[in-house]
Length: 115
Length: 112
Image (tube, rainbow over all chains, first blue to last red; front, side, top):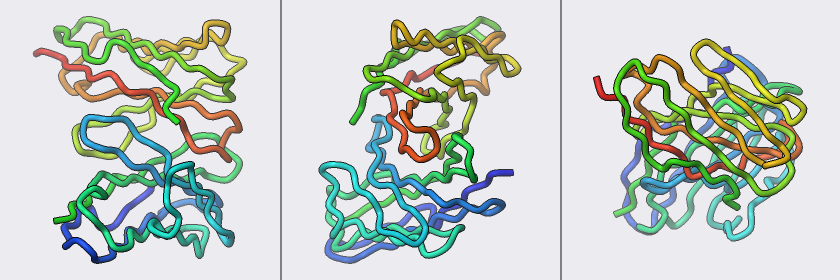
């Protein structure tokens, strides 16, 4: 149980385009999902907290107008990187918490490369 | 912000030996979790230890938590080649409502 999927697994796009990444909890409902970013050989950094039906909460230094988050249902959150630039190239990973539990279950990640 | 520090940053041991990784953090926590990440992949949850717990076991894994020293250790016994991965500790201060603060990770290599 507690499986989280992400789509796509990887994406290559041109500078200036927007990219949408989906995060789904497959076998549980997630009122809260989180988005993280990981640069090569580095650790994960929390970008934002996504709550179903409300606006996302962004960490300091993360531009909310650049990284649009939508959490329209209890099983789906999306991250849209708008007007992507090469410096946005990174590994984006989402996680979800099941019910009242404390364990975060992570998706397999999406590797974004912006040319 | 990054508050966890793992040491060592990298560790290479022979298959069958035990591997110990340490993690330190700076602020008070509710839970501390350990995750494994294979190269370029997502994270696999290993174990969660609560702030009022001192030790926890799961199979070949043993985790300790010392809140007075703000540190935790992960011991993998009888290591296997498949244990080769990066290991991260992550903390939260409010349970499931909180995003996790990750340490820098330890890259573990098990030599066959």
